[in-house]
Amino acid sequence: MKNFKKLMLTGFLSLNYVFTIQSTKAEEFDMPKCPTTPPTYSQLLALAEPSDEFECLGTPEKYEITIYEMGLCSSSSNPITGSSGSKIWDKSTCIATMISDINGTKVDLAPGSSDSKIAALSSAPDRPANGNYNYAYILISSAFNLKGSYTLSDGTTYYSKQGNDDLGPFGAADKTLSAAQEHGEEVDNIGLGEGSWTVANGAEMSSAFQMDNGKMSAILLNDCNHVANSCSNTTSAKATSQANVSKLLAIFEPTSQINISDTTSGIEVKLVVKQGGYLIGGNNTDIEFFGSAPFRPQITTF
Image (cartoon, rainbow, N blue to C red; front, side):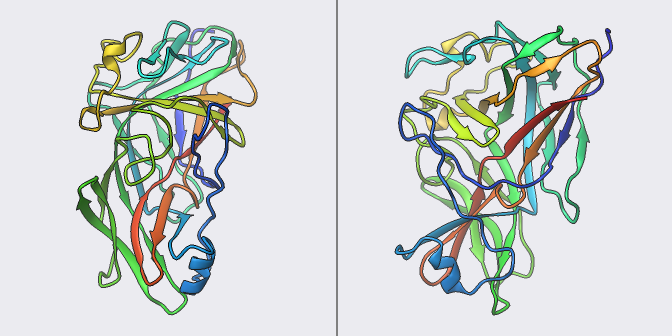
């Protein structure tokens, strides 16, 4: 069977956790979900009790990412290889199921008023060979475009707007606005704080972190040319500083292998963001910021 239908990307919805790496073994950090019914402020603070600061996961109104490439890998070991500080993306057992042009393809994962939405991406350049694939990958920009809001039980609504500080761009929270404004964010470091999803050493993850449908690992890359394959199989593609970060390569290891057979027509990738793709945080008096949280992949064949 030579034809392979278009890869479909779905902002399908429901993420329960933010995941962190704190050791060499996979772990899962349980981040509470923000209440869907407008809460009192004391209820938000109770999410982080006894601290006077809280963070919880909500649903963004906009979650736009730029996708450069997606694909499958048949290797028995993680395609991110090498020692700490010099990890590379070993693409030798991977096949692309979607390659965008040099500028990438922008996709908004936020569902809006529906439970899901579908974006048709470019057709697979080659049909993956029949067999089992242990890993899937996605290469995206480190820059995110977000928007969101959150309402309390007294009717006060905090809306996002662009903020900037010494750590870079982030989503500031403002209760004087009448609508959410878009804000950029750079996932440009691997550590705690703004612009960060994970905890590890340097500009790369040191091990996989656990999701309930598998594991994820990633490295931060510079502005390498994915069309020319300069993002893989070389240490020169790895970001050497926060200022040098341009792309993020995420490797997914699903609980079950992805099987391609003669009856397989295509692959559907769901990137889940509802009640999980948007980080909301504050202190003991105010909601202070909004930010991105990791989407959760779900991969099926059809």
